Length: 276
Length: 270
Ligand SMILES: Nc1ncnc2c1ncn2[C@@H]1O[C@H](COP(=O)(O)OP(=O)(O)OP(=O)(O)O)[C@@H](O)[C@H]1O
Ligand SMILES: Nc1ncnc2c1ncn2[C@@H]1O[C@H](COP(=O)(O)OP(=O)(O)O)[C@@H](O)[C@H]1O
Ligand SMILES: [Mg+2]
Ligand SMILES: [Mg+2]
Image 1 (cartoon, rainbow over the protein chains, first blue to last red):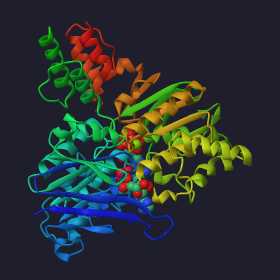
Image 2 (image 1 turned 30 degrees about the vertical axis):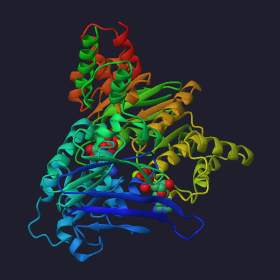
Image 3 (image 1 turned 90 degrees about the vertical axis):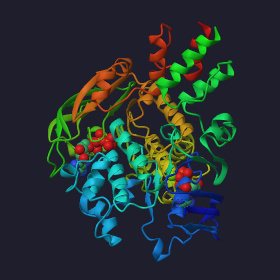
Image 4 (image 1 turned 30 degrees about the horizontal axis):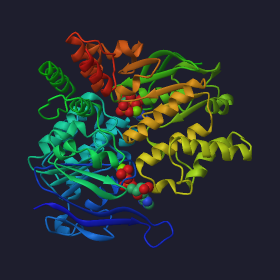
């Protein structure tokens, strides 16, 4: 069982003079328990990939299947949950609580896995403070978390999150990271992010997109041994990782790369001592 | 100068104020970073700075003009550019270049100058080649760049940017930070709201908001080295500042926020 894209391509405005190939031949699979990261420069096709995986766009060629079913199949309904990059485009109800409760209600879940209240709490929003508010009046970071809660509430088997930590303060980001961790007990999670370092430790796979094509796909360690494809795709390595790679170039013996700055600094100090 | 004088603001129907008795000054030629937890009042402050919102109590003065004085709204908006957190709320044109031209056209910029301004703004944010694209067909990061271009084209004396890099990749972030650097050098006043603490480093001054109040207003280095205050405010040290602190605690000399190469150089040189 998995959410699978097989050589999926997507062209916006196909057949017109404005046709643009946003996605070309992308193949990936997301299984329950897995965390997959998708990275790439602005406009590389990340959000398009999520829309295709969620069944919002039909691939122009290739296919997407949810546990072997077509995304549009009634039986596949509710198995995939997508949180948009711009959370405001996702809201429609009059109150935050109604918005979050809509998913389970719409899917006819009489006993939703999370109550709307619980889902809000999981992302660090107090339902007593935010529940009765209009979702359109939330601050940027509050809105992003409310949108995530709305998808958590119906417990999809495949969770697709577009920039889930953008614009969040430290405690909120920690809340979202632990939501992602917990969700993996019963779901596969795919995260699009410009800040991969916070997820790399836990990710099984990283997909690097460049102008719609997949230029790397594999374990994060592969990218660290040879960041070539990452750099060629117009990306920059996070500073903490770069510091360690630069140290290696200078002959430092480092066992593995750390994503945590404190740990990374201690490793560098240790390697320096070892060198004298 | 933009002056906030004892400003409080409560949204209609809200239980609690978004800003309480804020007094601040933003000067031309200065780059100010604004940080704070989600909901601390940053975007509200931004909207008050150009008169999109007016204070419930206190006043906001832009080069002496009160934002509550409706007869000055046009002058104020043309002096204070605002890039909203959600670019969708700001994009009006049917194609990219039209959207960028919208602001300066409204200001009465002559035709020949308009073209130059629009092209320069589009180039500054890296959207060259997309002039004829419809904004709703852009990726979110591209929309964010478009919103910034629109503000740049108006050539405002002050530019307030609400998380302008939140949807951008690393290269896009650098490009925007460079644009800000250039604007400050040219004497513009910059107010830059961000959650990325590393982006505060080049600022002349940083303001931290906490629950609608000013919790810190001073030099960046002072805030970034005060881990207790950062924790209390829901903020954090940028990764390179954390790395440098560990190295410094071991008796080596490194700057507050070194580049990765600089840190390694310091380690292996000494
Ligand atoms: N239109 C509105 N109506 C009612 N309350 C609002 C409205 N807009 C914002 N608020 C509330 O005012 C407070 C400050 O919001 P603001 O948008 O200024 O926060 P912020 O610091 O920009 O947060 P973020 O980092 O999440 O963008 C928050 O509690 C928010 O929920
Ligand atoms: N609705 C649309 N119509 C036409 N082109 C689009 C549309 N949405 C996105 N694009 C284009 O497709 C490409 C990929 O966009 P997107 O998937 O949003 O990128 P990313 O999420 O990686 O930033 C970009 O060139 C973008 O301009
Ligand atoms: Mg996107
Ligand atoms: Mg905000």
